Length: 461
Image (cartoon, rainbow, N blue to C red; front, side, top):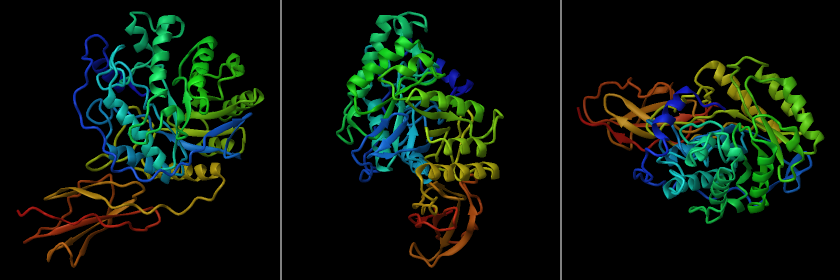
């Protein structure tokens, strides 16, 4: 996906090669405390001909692109997403039925906060943030697809970054032996990385379902063969995806490549069916790496596009672009690049489509959609003349209660499911003539309430 013009501006400001310092500004690493017990068993997804399997059973999936899990550009400039934001987005994906998430977390070269700020430097802090994202995905039962480079030189760098490091044109990324060697060194750095939270090397972690050679790249077949074989040599138990912007017919016979992919802007059922058949004939697996769930670009309806995927067994899965979760203080993250999805949804049309995507995810899993999950307790982040709270995954509405006798109540409901994550801070607090305490709780789409937030006393006027 082309992330957007606004992102390109950020890239020019943040990702210059020679003019930027090699050492990133200090920032606190993520804390391991939000990570509960892992829920993914030590079983790798495998390929059997044109289908994927897990524990010898067919494995089909639907999920989301959450590209920003390692480095983000949507909240106040290029920085690492907080542990809360990572966990909240993954929890939301899971609530929507996802079992696989695609993330650009390890596409990270040429900017101060990148994994490789310069050709000869490595940023441990950035790697620790990727460690956290992988460990968090594991605890939510989510597997990851991870592209290794981007065709576009955005805030996290791309193919042109490696070429510029050697003072060569962008196309040298695919042809110049020195630049290819630099990229291989980067690939080895990522795959051999030992996660500081789990103690497992990335190459040995079944949470990482597949490595994608790149995002919408345009390589010659020879480059795909060389890089795919190199990845498979280091990580033989993980799957390899050809990240070509199109399905390269000549690359269908590469032994090291397991999966081929295509992105759909707009959604096109005929093209989808034709490409899926082409890959199946080659006895390889296929999945939809990105698609425009919102019909922003026109095309076929979301319902009909999803139906083709569901009814074509050789389509292993699909990933819509792109899911965003809650901000650390209140409300949702807004994307610079379009196609944003918030769940349950900002508008009635987004809500309708989000429900379709959730139902589809369970169809792909072969199970009936369950009841909505019960939200966890919100966290009050602002209290005075107004009140704000950090939203929680799966929340549809919120209620606000007040007590004047003390933090143990009795409590009076002053907002009965009247607030959402789109109208915080909430300014409807009635005047208080003395001390007052407040608490908030979330309700899911089924109207089931979660636990209350910790009660907080409002400052005395």
